Image (cartoon, rainbow, N blue to C red; front, side, top):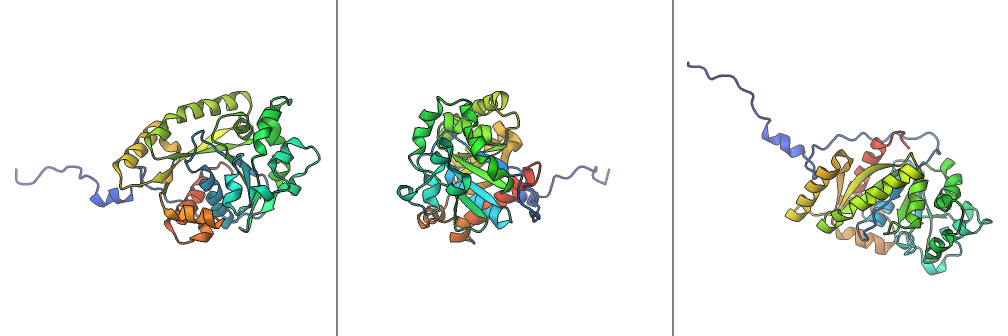
Length: 297
């Protein structure tokens, strides 16, 4: 036999070049289409009971990236630490009205509390330490889990997206946020200990879906503070994809000092360092989020 037997050749080596940091092929994300009118907002909570995983950073920068794509965005600071408000340049001690007043005082209207952020198309419901009292006071309210949903109702017809920055716990405030939401984005630091608490978070989300909010779904799990140079980050990302599959966003947020610098400057990274890799990552995340949502916001 002089001619070799035919056989299936393996894929060309450069096929691996298209693999993203999650170990899966990177999809081609469509450019978001412009919207002709605003309203019918999708409400999304940034939720993880572990602190320091990038919830606030993701809320600010995803919101700013969505605003760049023509969406009208409302950010809700639902953490008594007020990090979202501080990260957008507000002084928590100089606020006349916050989301606490909106929750607990019947004569306060949404318009009185909402403030502009300096980013065109993006507004903020600010917060400060007063909000910590709401968790205690809400315990005695009827339908206490639906309080945030009620006060946010007027915003749904004005905005395309409402992003809620949750506190790092699974208490009553977080349950309020989940009850008011259509979806949840779970920022998760690419570090071993961050993986351990996610099962408890998923149990809480499942309970809220079953008992309070049947429309609630997990929009995605977002790997943050990723450093592809370390074996640890790559192994955690691999474990994350094994556990959550396609729920994990293809986009990952890499470590960069620009995030800290933009927080000090009181503005999103998309305006502070517009051409940085961090800004590009959040623009890519915005495209991926919009592509995943059942009705493009």
